Image 1 (tube, helix red, strand yellow):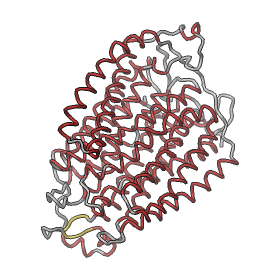
Image 2 (spheres, rainbow, N blue to C red):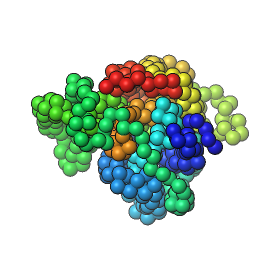
Image 3 (tube, rainbow, N blue to C red):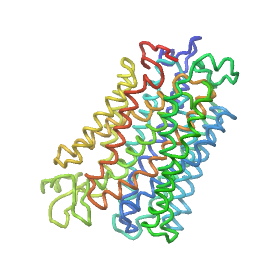
Length: 523
């Protein structure tokens, strides 16, 4: 099919290749959908707090931190096809690990499996995201990546359904954890089949126009364009701040397990990391003045994307992982965002498994029901992707990003306000609005870079999603100390930064827009 969206300047169609690569997003969404509902399961089975159960997200996103840069290097060495096959084999290994993990029956064993799968998904993310942007005209890059990521949304719909059947089928029973291995071993088998398909398929390494001369190492050529040193410095310093925050949160999580009290951790780490971050100012100033345009860090639209992706994934991981907590009654405090349900609903056939009577005698959504209901959230997520992709075919991608982020800010405020069913509806509105953020930030961040620079930049943007390993623990702590509605102040702050990136993208990139209409070179 020679559709303009997937047609090269020479007239070659990349439609079949695009469809094949899009299947990877289906896999990614399915695995993440199951992981996102594991938190409540471990809270119940192992008597963990919300902050402690966030170790699941920590293990998942630390897999991205560990593997992102090696994945970028690997992709540059063996190409898109080799990188995809390697990533699939790593996902399969993680899936099969859940079989011995259930025999070990320890929290760390399950976390290791989660981390291994995430490492494989990291390779696939590093390869597939930038690859979709080059399978056709550059002005439709954001549209293509959002279409591909729509398959991610499909996987996310079915992941919670399958996970709820296995994780909550015997809620409260002693054999609960045993069911976990079944869907993951199934994933391992399916992934091996997909790896064989890719081995025999045609996956060409597509060359793209190097608008910023990022692949050209000749100073004379690189110097033809000027670097906005002020913007480069500001974006690089923001990255340093988030690295410092990441280090602090990682150590703040690990040191208490080594016997260091939380008070001493704060007393030692906070001032040291703050001073170390400020000490980088002279170094960064000197670095930004000496870089040329062939460095990806010379382009603020890229470094800004790493910051935007860090905070967006933090918001997404927090909302997704605590969805069941938001929809059910807190067993300790009795708080529930969802108003009391009509008692008659418990007698409606297939809906019976969705509800249970709480200690107060009132009908509420059960854990299994909330796990299944998460799929409704991901239907909203999929619709957002499809509508967002259509809008970006006509309007500037950065404006659509800013619009959806602004709507997310409003929805978060309404959740925090605890306005009954309106607040519940806003949780689902957040799923809709978040849908386009990851792929759009990705497309905006790598726009205009050369083929090799795209692979390198993709690795850093993928690594930046480690925000999902760190800030959800803070959201869980807020939920423990206050309630899950107030905990939405964390994603609220994140959406503010995403909105700013969307609004400032033309200034950061020097482009008028990234749409199907036109682009105007500014550098």
